[in-house]
Picture 1 (spheres, one colour):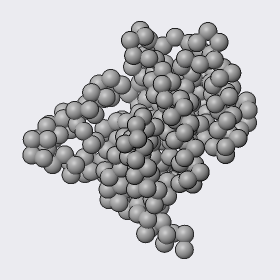
Picture 2 (cartoon, helix red, strand yellow):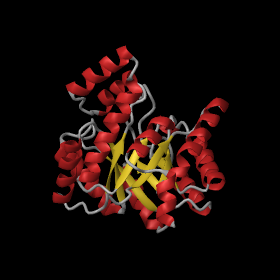
Picture 3 (tube, one colour):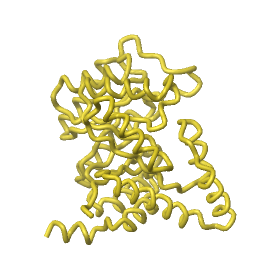
Length: 288
């Protein structure tokens, strides 16, 4: 099997300890030669400066291709584009363009009076500069705020028409969930790569809460398995096995790129990659 492209998502540190954890994550996963790594943006733009600092450090010190998350929340158009162009000047040409989550307790998303109305508008403005490869978000089980999946896919199509060059999905548990979504996207005329997002589950309680908040269905067999593994102390083994099985099914189904949500805890992601045969040694052999 051809080695798939891989990418990793990190989040910016908020403390000195978090900085050490992020750098350990980078050092652990960099030898796997990712196509890119991405750095998230906090709800309400709360990590705007921290994201910029993390992107700069990974780009200049680790020399990895970086995709910076950028959102519409709580910023004017000028401020948002200034951040984007600052990335371009620093040599970062990949952007993950998102509407973004509103600040907690705000009662929902409201566009800044002088800001972008939606992610579609943000993508169009970034594309107009001609300086970026633009990834956007996608939901195999629809965005929680969408009326239905057809409406959600239509929104994704508008982002692609505005200039998005790829889409990265929210995490999911079953390969058929992704394949149905991919087929529906093709039927809707979406012709950019749809990259599946993979979450190796380091903490079941946290993953379950996250799944419920973003509308990701949890198969009963997965829930039962994690409840049993938690009781027996075998959650890491189970998480690695399930994520590896999911990734293998995706690769067998023609997926060429896997995007891992690391949560800045790299060991499970590394183990899944190794189980799939994605190792530093294999990468070196391919280069030779």
